[in-house]
Image (cartoon, rainbow, N blue to C red; front, side, top):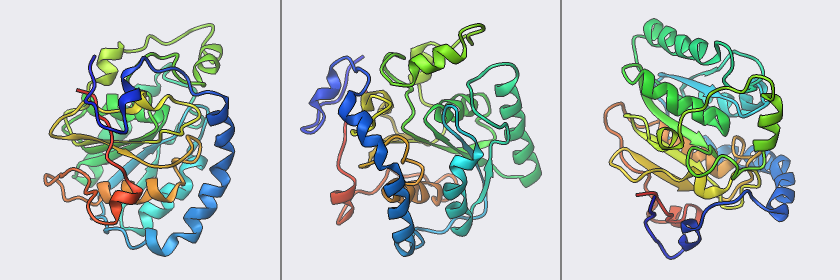
Length: 264
């Protein structure tokens, strides 16, 4: 595995480790990020409008649809048909979790007659990516928030908890090479270098004509309510179907969304 070097990303070449104590402590800022998104509501509502297509949102590990309500509420206000995943608490892919998730994609695709977008926060982003690989005919785009699809599984601070939850019947995970391969649809990874749960290099995309990574200043627990992350998410979902272009960082956006590394 090699990386494209940019001036602000040389440290991504090292084997990633789980974030240290300082970054973990900075996760306490998540409530302030939510407050910032409320204060920034006029700016967020100036994002491009959606075209009414369905957006299915997957929560992170041990979270429920309640955690994605602010995100989905914003998307609905912007004209998207946003849905929760509808399977309660996300404890990982056990039993028929993924089969039910795949069926929900097919049902929404069939009922609307249109492709849908998949949005996943942390572990939910792994669902979004893998399900899009299974149903590319039904998926328009994928956006992940702090999802660890690259690098070693141990490079995040939720790994031991995940192992404990599945200590009796651990699911068989896809290989890291499989996880790192992006779906055959436009795919965006939104990540933060100050993520206190997932090592940020583990959220860098493979460079490609339909894949990109967008860096924001955010905590892991706040990515779904952080105003910069929400604005970038809304921008990505508003693109017309079949006309995907990489995120525009020109002008004032360059100060909020710096150029970043990408995997090659």
